[in-house]
Length: 331
Image (cartoon, rainbow, N blue to C red; front, side, top):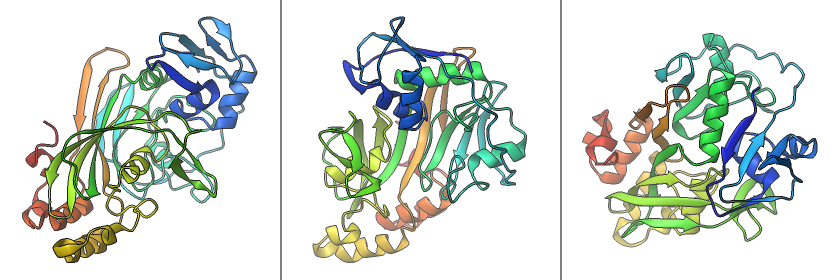
């Protein structure tokens, strides 16, 4: 794979192995090994993994040659392709689909479906060909896949430099009166490694939240990522007291948060919310080869339309194929 080079935009970052792990779809140990073997240079000089990046530093990551990846099984799943050319794919990922093979899901992932489809894929990192960034299993919506190494290099650089805009639609408990910027570090929960939490020793994390539509028990909001931490949107929204409707981990009581005359409505919403109401609705990026700007959108899938209709007490929203557009989500 070609080296990845990018310039740092934030004033400071966490230590470089953590930063690379988060931005380049690597495990923390994989990122640490690349740094330890001299594969990461900052302004032309190899650094230690404890190095913290600062604004305008130029980072170059040279991925080591690896053994052939595990043979990927074919998974015959029809994919909703929003954009495709010889350089990249953009998929509208359904909920309940894991992105790449891992324990419990070795042969029924998005990556297995791409293999079955016959898609050309970049080498990627450590058995994850084509995967530039991830979505949680139960989060639906737009996701970028690189079809060659050069495109992967450019896309990874642009994500690390925050040049790719990612907007999510979320239904949250309670109400926001104005846009909110959530700047709170995230790290692993000390008692449960599968959960994340706001913690002073965590990685910097920034989320922008804009209210779009107010319903009696919930708000529809647009979320723009400033960083891309694990579970970032879900943890940040729970942190400010407005967890995502249907979130099985960070709901903080779900419908029980709503009291008074809207409590019955909240219970009804909770009952129909079979998964978290979180959807990657739009992407804005420069094409990795031509530089042309791509503005891509996908509206809510049918299951989330039903939950939105329940929250809005408007059954017609469940029948619309464009409820986000109708409600002014895309501006």
